[in-house]
Image (cartoon, rainbow, N blue to C red; front, side):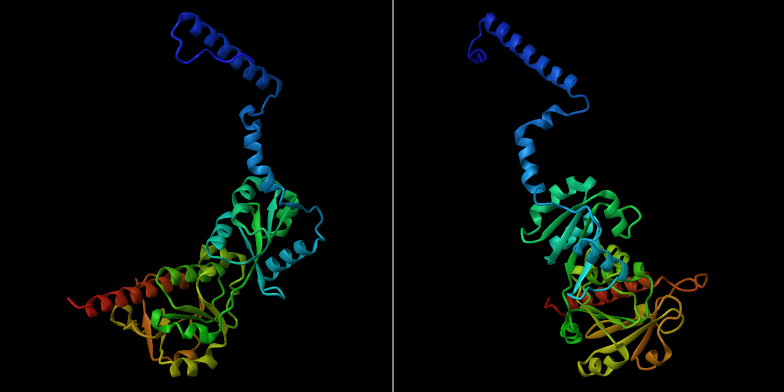
Amino acid sequence: MQSFPDRKCIDPSCFAALRVRMTSALRSVSSAKKALPGINVAKLAPENRSRKEPLLSRLRPIAGRHNPLIKELRRAFSRSELTSDDQYAIEGLRILEEAIRSGVRFRAVFFSDSAQNKAAKLLPQIGAHVETLLLPDNLFANVVPSETPQGVAALVRWKEYSLDDVLARAQSGPILAIAGLQDPGNLGTILRSAEAFAAAGVLLEEGTVSPFNSKVVRASAGSIFRVPIARTTLPATLGTMRKQGLRLVATSSHKGVPLPDANLTGALAIFIGSEGAGLARDLISQMDEVIVVPHSARVESLNAGVAAGIVLYESARQRTDREAKSEPS
């Protein structure tokens, strides 16, 4: 093959030769496009292919629904609970990115055939020891609960916290105690607000929606991976909370101390009840204080997730103000 004319040549014949070779090159590309309709010829370059192929070769194709990991993923999604070895299921590109960012331990990651572009993006961030599987689109859609699956799911390990773990953090922010909440979207929103406003942790009473429900995970926008969560029986823990010096504050939609007048600083546990009935009377009777978020009488009550967010914001505001006042001028 002849080389192009010397870049320093200024003779007209040099430019003529350059023009002939450029025209020939363009014709070659045009011919390739005609021979391969619908194919981006530029993407056929070896250097472009080599970037993705080693990554995607990690994917183990699985065609049958009887594969043990497929069964485990389906079971985790359908039961919304931990598996026997403390794993739960998550789904969606953003949620997996949040899990990676949060240092969550992966057991296995699943991609659908049509999501291989997402696999190429995520695989460099997933440890080589983690199993990565490639499923047909119809099998993937059959396993995950989402109506419009994004083609990415995983089994991840739960980082367990005990009641003592959460109570030990009480000086860093309020502890949320959730009793009987049933809506997964509300619980996910509360977890997100808990992280946003620096809550020390969240206690979930028996009978509250599982934090491993896929809708809870999605609504938390990744906060479930970072907020300390302990499952407990709240009535039995009230004495332990008091021994740790916590004040117990209940939220109500009808009567109580108006939120702006309440003291939400110091070691504190804020109790949130179910969407309809709120907290049980026997639980409210053991509280140090009951607070209410003022709102229009035309609205019967606030969404539990919204109310919790407002209370957490007010607590964070009061704590910030107190810290500012205590600093030497």
